[in-house]
Length: 100
Image (cartoon, rainbow, N blue to C red; front, top):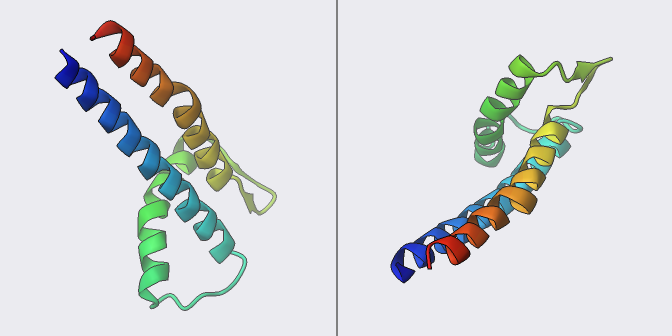
């Protein structure tokens, strides 16, 4: 069963790394709203294409737009923090203790 445990722990570590990277992409997307970047820049297009579907989902399900300020990036970052602090360690501990 150690193979399954190692697999679950590895997937949890990869998910942790992906979420850490996505946090920085969300922050970059929020900072880009403060300036007027070139919309044809491939980096700007990539950042928007990766973050806008998530922001749109949050905007549809939670009213996070008050007084001209969009709080959806903050909600997404809070969700990522919750997943990184609670969900990933829980899965890792379950894999190590329950499947060994």
